[in-house]
Image (cartoon, rainbow, N blue to C red; front, side, top):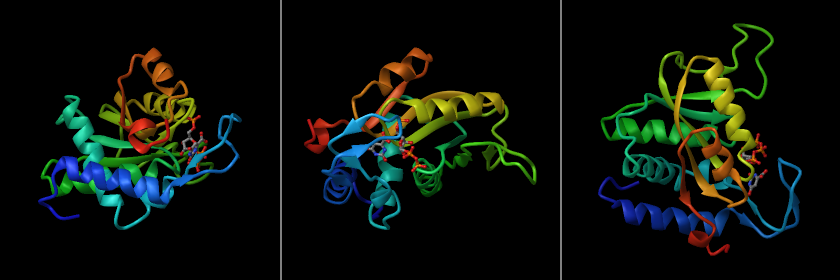
Length: 191
Ligand SMILES: O=P(O)(O)OC[C@H]1O[C@H](OP(=O)(O)OP(=O)(O)O)[C@H](O)[C@@H]1O
Ligand SMILES: O=C(O)c1cc(=O)[nH]c(=O)[nH]1
C-alpha cells in the first residue's frame, strides 16, 4: 500500500475490493444457522496481498477515529476469520510507529503443549480489541471476548470490517462494549 494513500482513498479502495472479490450472491447457511441469500467471503480480501494492507490501515483508522489510539496493546479474535484481520492491524501499527501485538483465540483450548486458548504474547492484564472479518449475530466475537476475559485481558472494544446489520451491534453493546464497523451494508451496495 502506498504510504501516501489517504484514509479516504484506502477506505474507497478496500470497499471496491470487497465488493469485487468477497460478495457472493448465493443461498447459504451461516455460522449461526441463519439462512441468507448472500455471503461475505472476506478471507478472499484479508488474505489478498492487495487488500490485506488496506484492512490494516482502515481498521486502525476506525479505531483512531473512535478514540482508541494508544488505548490498546493487542488485537485479534476467534480463529480463523479474525486472524488475518488482527495481523493486518499489527503490521500497519508497526508501519505507523505505534506497534500493537496480535493474538489468536482458539475455538477450543489446546489439549496438549501449554493448553492455551489464547495464542500470542500474553494478554493477561492488557487492554485488547476483539476483531472480526464480519459479524452476523456477534456470537463468534463474543466467544472471543469471553475467552479473552478468562485469560485476564481487558477488552476495550469490538471492531469488525463489515457489519451485516443482523443484531451483532446490539449484542456486543449489551455486553458493555463499543461496537465499531468499518463498512455497513449500504457502504457496499448491499442494502
Ligand atoms: O457473528 P456470527 O453469527 O458469529 O457470524 C460471523 C462469524 O462467521 C464467520 O466465521 P465461521 O464461523 O464461518 O468460521 P471461520 O472463521 O472458522 O471460517 C465469520 O468469520 C465470523 O467469525
Ligand atoms: O454469519 C456467518 O457465518 C458469515 C456471514 C458472512 O457473510 N461471511 C462469513 O464469513 N460468515
